[in-house]
Image (cartoon, rainbow over all chains, first blue to last red; front, top):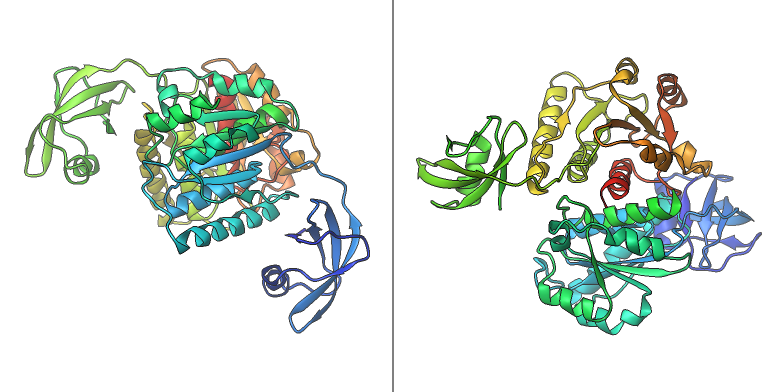
Length: 249
Length: 249
């Protein structure tokens, strides 16, 4: 069943209209008809079954039928993915796939070796684009939570906000090259349901030694994602898949 | 260091020219100069350091310097990914990412619900394209093995060839929906170094009940890849990442 997110807090029997883009989707793309059923997830992350009651002037009015049983599609820990600025299509792919794999929050990071720079107007355009991508991916993979796209940050911001995260990892190629592959598993053995975890990834250019040193100063630990060199856009998917496998499967 | 594959069996001190596309890459793309060093992996999967000796008429002559110590970049088991025919860009992405994540063999599968059909000339063109993608990805992620791209197969072929694989899995959405997530881990607990394993994925349309039943007849077991619904191109990356995490990290 098609899934939409609403910014409202919903209750059974309420009548509701979807936001502009979602209304367009249900009326024009899905060609919704009276009595068609959809799922609407409200601002408190509760999923409801809803039915199209009327369609007037291309505007669908829906009626909330009942709350759906919680399907537990969220990772038991809250994972923040902080990534250097890869080329646009790569960062789009990261956000889409990381949403499917259970990410809770995304932080775009301006790093020394980024090939791409976000400046001026571009910043808010890029953030809005990533918000759309995470919302669509969350609908598509049946999640009740849309991952938040954070503002553009730096290593210095991460240093200041280090206290916000219980577990702090850096995916660092140099660790992999040394053949030390155990840290990710060590960390995941320690996490408990409800914990939060942040993991930092470089862009195509990787992280500098200084950036890694700054993060280590505030408690970040380097970890390897196995013996093969993963592309910038593959590494976050590997990390989240490993977390899901360890915690959910 | 840039990495190339050669179809020859190499030895130290040998002089060698790369294949046409790789020669173009080293001379024109990398703008290689005399004494530049590269890695060449030979047909027996041994990696050698080599040096550009001369460049004449856009043709580089390289000298093999020494064999490199084995960096163990291969998964300890041989994993075959068999996938329904997704749209072209998706199947390209699957082969590229699965190569990075350690896949050993790829089987394109013609399934009932595939949106895309491969016919006539298109088949060999598509296979050649996937071969190029797997070779480039293997070079890029520092592997010594190029995953083989198999010919176009069907569920009936997989039935006949079931004896070739020790462990046989089906990634099946319906298993995930029932909340039964343990099978992948159960299987991975049983594998031993050197085993081979095949895992079958549907395309965007998924597998039919009949296709799943046919595979189960010959010993395939259904498994879930966690509680979220993954896109066709995400599921193989999840599975390989989980295998790498279980076996290598």
